[in-house]
Length: 427
Image (tube, rainbow, N blue to C red; front, side, top):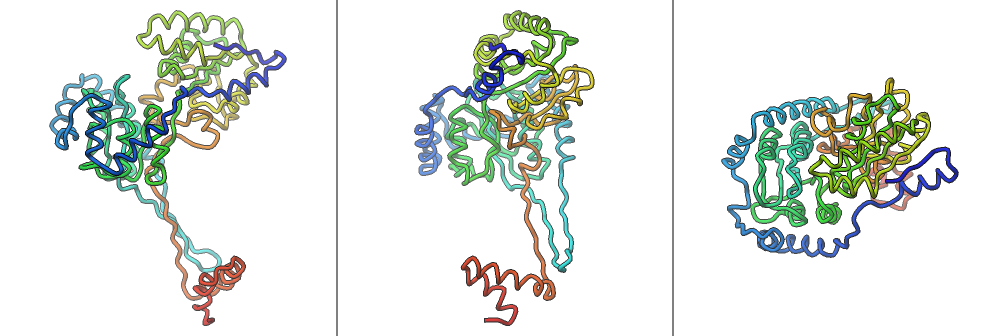
């Protein structure tokens, strides 16, 4: 864990270097993924079944590749009642939040008499990758599928590595409007969604997190299909004054550190004594977590405590451009309103990032690795397309045509120019 003091010589250079460090585990996966993707593209179902045997050590066929409706119903029913209720509660809040993002079609006539506008339409088919292995993630299902359903996507196909499907995941899929579930994971699942494979029909966009192989596969199929983002390790910055309970702040930091040894948790505070108490609380809490090994590695290798005036915090946050930032203080807007680069902002002492992961309603699929400088979290807009509309009558065309001809000729595109000129009675 790094310690920085804003008033020490060399702070700016050291802090800038810290924010530029890569946290992804170095892996030469592109070549392996390329072979997998090309095999699925060329062989389809046969490649999927072969990779299931090779990578997942399971025997599947065309019939068992798909999770049946009865399996979904039985799995959802096996989910504990309190978890089902929490899933329904979260799904309702996520749906309500994303419904409010719905844009409106627009149509107007400008001064030249041209009628212009735009129309929003949903994607037809979306694929959702849901990780397996480390844990069950019903929240991943909800955060990806509920906005797609809210946008009006008709087909939502979920892929997840073969093995026992957790009841909570199946309950979330049912609540979110997932229309099909396939037992396939890894790069081969991404390729199957992009190109189709046997009974798995291709989709228009692939969303959802995965490991380095899944991320590499999404990068390689982009252009054939759309993708949400190339997700990196989780991140949190907590800006806190000394009036906070250090146990609370330690728990908030560890809530992201436990995701992955490459995750990052950073505390910014103006109170060195408080920072020491938070550090002690982190150490104590690590011993109580089943995820303590990963969280400890994250805190040791990528964590940081920055002692700085709180008025400097917005600039520091903007430099980090984190996935999540908490402002744990009274009147947090005074500082948070100065933040331009963050995936999600949590305001006040009772708004821990964890509620955003599950039930606040906002989406937890957020930009990482400083991508908040130029991108946003997953939203309704990721599942909609905007189409421009242009309508000209004869009079409106006459006002636009001369400039069209002039620009087309200037660009050396005579057919463009003729397309307008011929309507003007010119050859």
